[in-house]
Length: 169
Image (cartoon, rainbow, N blue to C red; front, top):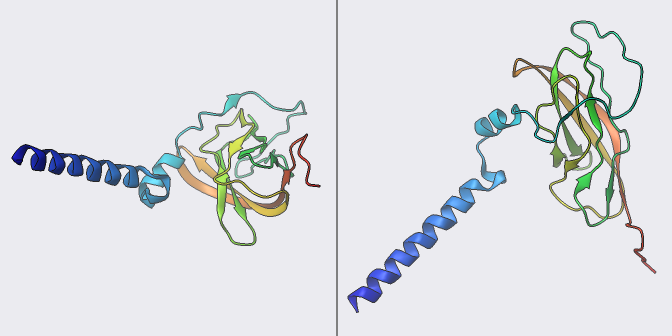
């Protein structure tokens, strides 16, 4: 009988510890200071080069050239979004981009730090959206040597489209 009580106690302890560990590791419960440090890590989706051929232009110190899809698309039922954000090599700053719904301010997703001369083709949204067009704010945060150096906001439209073969009739 004592063995069963001991076994039950150990099992409950392990389950409680596992639940606490899972709760603490959940992204929505990461302390803001730790999240800020994680956000300045290089984005592992970033690739060297450019997405689209274009002429380079001279960018002065204190200026920043934003190259991004102004109507990113997501297939209904998915969370992969075609942001197509590019940080041209002529920029002097690293940057990260985050998308927020204009109607609620809810954070939908974004990049981590993207160095000049790199691009991120797609990002993962935090939730699935119904088909339609969503006004969003793209916040571009600039970083110089991993230190905040300014930013800007752009109003763009996120388009969620029905997948081919879907019928709603």
